[in-house]
Image (cartoon, rainbow, N blue to C red; front, side, top):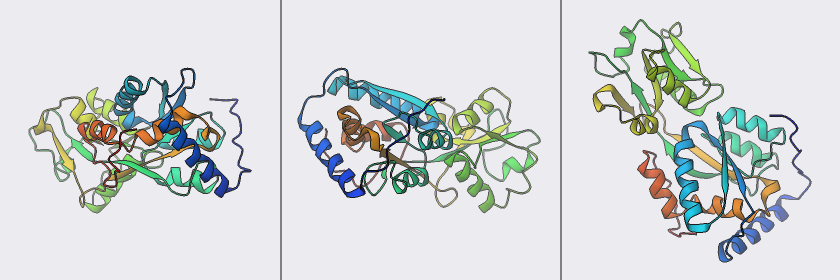
Length: 269
């Protein structure tokens, strides 16, 4: 995308936080007005769940939220260059925190809205899906690119911990994001893959074909959200950002196979 407007970073951090809190309190107590949409940049692995959240939010609040999807690295770069997004739902916490530190996001901390798990997917094989089994494969093994995608970095961590990262290098195929890694396996272009558990569950893959990789075998991926600074006065953006922590939203997120945050306030904005 080109032609982004630059985000104004001249506001003092304290005044930004006060303005956001004031806007949030107003938008939670006042019905949202039509014609005040928000644009949410969402990591590819979370797109399906985000769409369900947007639909639920629209049903209850009558406000429009539009989604733009990509890898966390791509979206972060776009935001840094001034992309006109209102909320960033990353698949990590490091990139959102960089936006906070650079004065491009509201507040002083990142909101963790869920934690994602990996799955080793080994379809059409007589072998059980284990990390040791993939050593016997001769074909490509798909993972998300660790440099761009947090789920790729988690996959690299699991393979490194198992002592397989170096030996599997000739077979590893790096996808742009974890959803693309899933597509490689589903299409037969990869013999196996380390993908997001949520995409496996959504695809109704037989339980005999995949293995959930949980800590300490593979790290859970903390996914962070921030409200971008130019959107501090966008009531829809602020309300959707608050909605992510509601019990209603967290039920949807949990139902899609994510671990939900443990610090909910139990409210339903």
